[in-house]
Amino acid sequence: MRALTKSTLAFARTALETGKRSLPSYSHSRSPHKYTLPQLFAILSLRDFLGTDYRGITTILSEWSDLRAVLGLTEVPHYSTLCYAERKLLKKTPLHA
Image (cartoon, rainbow, N blue to C red; front, side):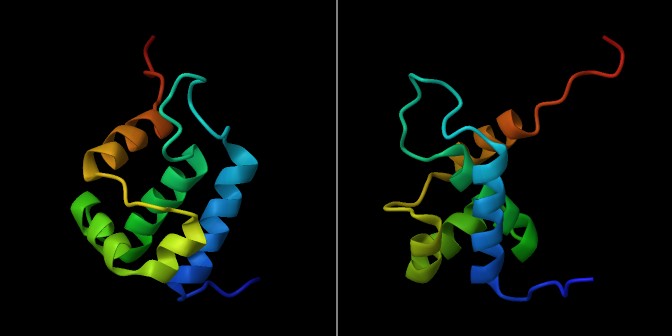
């Protein structure tokens, strides 16, 4: 069994790589192409890892240049972008369709 990491940067790298293997780069060919789905997935995973909310993770990203570098971000997404991305990534079909 592998030990769980306590390193935020190591977690971010792993989440980004998982997203790259599992998700397309963009949800639509005409999307703004500002952030990739793997980047958004990694940010949302970090939000859970750090136990913060949308605004909290954007503050952490804006203050932590090493974390932005690991995620390949040139700018920090608005918290609403993360909210919309989470809805899209966690979109579930109803049980009683």
